[in-house]
Length: 432
Image 1 (cartoon, rainbow, N blue to C red):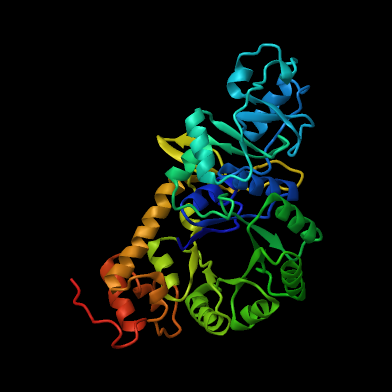
Image 2: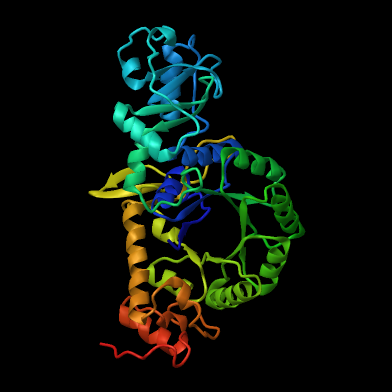
């Protein structure tokens, strides 16, 4: 799905990143917060839905019920494996579930007194399908995976199985965990400390913020990232010119984010996308403040592989902020991002009308893009970039590019047939 939630403190935190990955997109967790907070958000996304949980929370037999309740409240664990040393890799001696804890009044009681010792397990190596069949046959919700010495190496949860069936098109890594990206900056004193913390948390992709310009520090950080963590992709931006894009591509980025300045956005996107794709064969992400389906479709027609749609996601259920009601209208309280040492505070932006769930907004966007492609007679997003031959134009609705889409399929087709489709490549169709 060619849709991304960008690294904005008003849009993308853990909940939005989870929702975007479940729909087949991607969320970039913002960096306007402490290193610990950002790493915790990345870890939350990676642990939300997975095939095998390789780093699950554990406790010792002499840990108390109070410890288990605190861990459940903090991490949302409904089942906690008990190992002899309280760590992954320790010998499995039992398991404590939410039901076990609910029946205990004395929170100082040791877990060895209430844990289930007769635990259903499977031995590694085991395939995900076989492990799920074991869970179904034994009618258990937690399945520890152990080695021949009965040492805990992984866990599988029924909730993950259910969520995978509900979100079959989710963006996942090789371990069946949701994919998440994290933003880093080149102008921070602790930039590399943030990188290391995010790698440890499990980020799949870095977004290098170069909004202040592509500086020598930007190039140095890209090269260091690719030399040290070559298996993690790096996207950098926003760039506004071919020169900036070339500097980043030569440094080794895996993708470029483009966002123009004012009326030149469409021209910048088209020229940079054409250069990057023809010279380096790299994808291009458009961050052009796409506020509706028409603008997102314009960006794709101009060469973007994917589009940041933050204005459409701002105010959704998954975006940061609380809710309130005013005159019967449900509003979203827009909060400023938390600092390293200060809590969230209500920003001057105030409130915005609640937009509902992102899981309702994004499918409508994708359906609108699909409708535009169908009206053009183009079968896929990959095909459209081979047809366009567009001259520089104005992104604003009053200019030439504003004629791409008048919020109707006819508007898309008429403008694109005249300005984006090479003559003779598509049979011109009559319009209503």
